[in-house]
Image (cartoon, rainbow, N blue to C red; front, side, top):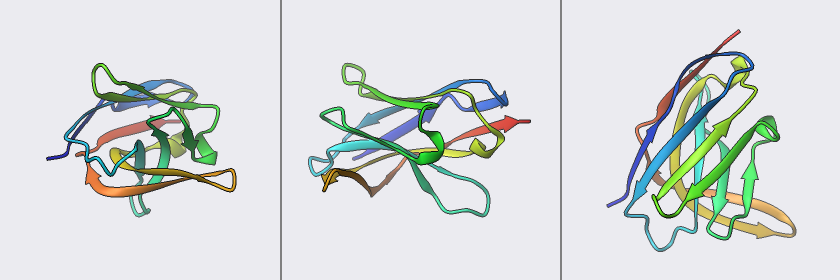
Length: 125
């Protein structure tokens, strides 16, 4: 059984930083990646960052240079370091397991239907 437990969200001022954590267990063999999505009120859930088991990464254009995804395999935990936060980053952030592939030099991430409960990030201006 897949279990994803997020933590680390909170309220921060614009320009500040937060680090989200996701403790993962029961990851299916078909998955080769783990990622973070976010969903703001009234909007769809979008990929923020994904990482394949070989360390390859994919980031949303809006967070490139500000967010970093890392994995601690000894703790089965994935992190999302978020720096220089903007009010537009306000959302519920979800951990996900999925599939990552590189095609014609471009990275793709497909989410499997395994999600954590989410953690709220609010950035004030």
